[in-house]
Amino acid sequence: METTRQLTIDCADPETLVAFWCEALGYVPEPPPDGHATWRAYGTDRGVPEADLAGMTDRPESIVDPTGKGPRVWFQQVPEPKGTKNRLHVDLKVGGGRDVPAAVRRERVTAAVARLTRAGATLVRLTDEPDPDHYAALLRDPEGNEFCVV
Image (cartoon, rainbow, N blue to C red; front, side, top):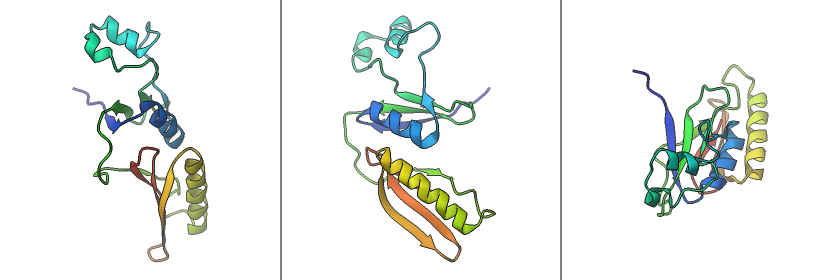
């Protein structure tokens, strides 16, 4: 049996996080299944009860890797706000690893941080440790979910 992967992120505003994480990951909004104009239409055709469709919009709530390699990410709207630090977070590895010169890794991380803050992230802190030559940034997405750029 094949196991597929999906990361589910609880949130208040799926539309905002779909746009942000598409930019961060290079993903695209997931289109509704073939033959359906919207996800709501798909749910209706599948017999999802009206009560469950009530909060569903016609806007995408999930994103996918256009190459098909990464997991699907679903932004599940929930009523309660984020309360504490994440117990799981995403690392965006843009630097290229230890085989890449430190100055190049620093440049790549700095460029990614600038791009993501323009897209709505908030920089929390930079980590710059000459030994073991580690440069990274901790950020928060528009709803406060922590992630790192390394």
